[in-house]
Amino acid sequence: MKLVHVTDTHLVPRGERLHGLDPCARLEACVADINRHHADAELCVITGDLAHHGTRKAYRDLRAAVARLTMPVHLLVGNHDRRDALREVFPELAVDAHGFVQRVVATSAGTFLLLDTVEHGKGWGSFCAARRAWLKARLDEAGDTPVFLFMHHAPFHAGLPAVDRLGLGGDGERLGELLAPYRSIRHLFFGHFHRPICGSWRGIPVSTMCGTNHQVPFDFDALEVVPKSHEPPAYAVAFIDPDQVIVHFHDYLDASALPYDKPSEGRPDFVPPRAARAGPGRTAP
Image (cartoon, rainbow, N blue to C red; front, side, top):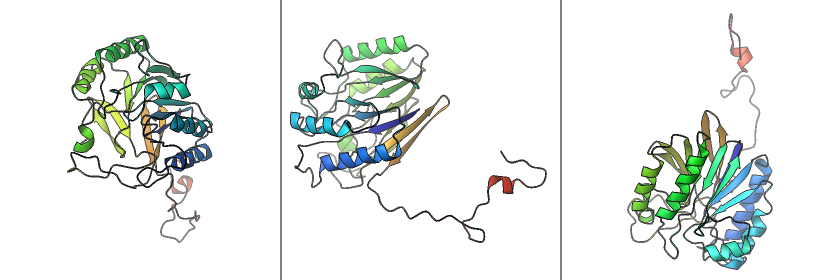
């Protein structure tokens, strides 16, 4: 299957700017690029910080923008979001028994578990006992079905102190202990960092990328204040197969690609077709 991952849209009401940029225009450009190149994706997941101030007006602008996507879209909450305002504008958003915006999405690739890591009114996140109990129950229900996790805050440090201090803290360790017995978890998609990051945590592959508005610079010294930058926005496209997960990051406003020029024999960049390279006694696939 093909999955589109978007994160950290940070919308403010249309016409307003944030950190010198227009979040609505940049999200609309993202949606247009996704529709142009990836209309065949099964779904899109946006991993939180949907609206910078959590206002209903910004969520209404968000609803209008994502309604243009050619595939279903699933929203997570981030530390900038307000659950009450978000659910007023998106009443179809499911919540668990404790009011957390958590749900299960069945896909052709397996079970997607969309988690709520927000600690209301705080920049850091949490994943309390109630949320962990919900997650454990869903993992038990999934059995051997492949599971993919989605969350805003990462449960680990990524080496960027200014953002790491706004993570899950001890709840990240407790989450890791909960997940340890489950061997069916194939990937963890997260947000919050506004940077392209990939790797693994406790044996689980993880990935995130830049947001659609502002970014966090590559700064390992900043601590007290999260710095901002105008690095290019991005979205990710994941190709999920039974034996692999491949994640591409795309800077959708980058117009630096050169026009395609078909190579010809005699040019140093010419590579003959595979059949021509097979050679005597060899067959090409």
